[in-house]
Length: 313
Image (spheres, rainbow, N blue to C red):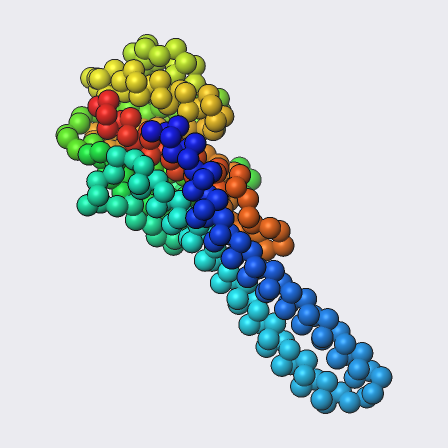
């Protein structure tokens, strides 16, 4: 299913997304053209006032032109705010038709929505006060029997040593829920981020969390992740071999940093990214298949991971 969606996405982009991008590109160029003309017009008015000495009329015209520039800047901001939601909805329409979604539970998108701070902290992946917490682009739906929600998040905290804001997490964060009761807590931290996670690991071990690497059957998974759980949690029954293999393959193929926790029937997956995904350029062309494909791949992969949890639970 994944290969089918990815192979066919180029055709869908050309027929459905590219026309919308071209329409948005024409709007961007038109707004920038008017803005440039307005700036040139103000310069010419000042020159005219200087040579002819009609400053009163010049001032009135300049003020009127400033009002027009303010209107153009508002239109540019409106372009920036609406560009991403238009493209994302087209991408989700495509994904919605290809995965095992409940027709009674279609994908829903809220540009200004995001996962709550309480939900993020409930994952117990990061032990942080989350002094900075910002999100956008919330997507909700159901894969198989599992409901999920995800959004972009930017989380930071004030460093006690330097009194400066430092990044805790930036990327896409997903929450899903098993359709049956599950007991236990499992947290999988990326091994290469150990130096940044000591406080979080210490907080979990203080609450009787234990290193469970010996219960991980997949060698690749064990090399990528540090696995901890509470006592008597059946790690190999919850974090099954197919799930381990899928998570390890994702990290190996993308190079992305992944955080995973399973707390009773709740699943949390954080996928780090330093990019503002699909945020539009103002001074550059936005008609890029590669940028759209990157966003599509990220969202599709997370949903496929949910599907793997649903099938191999």
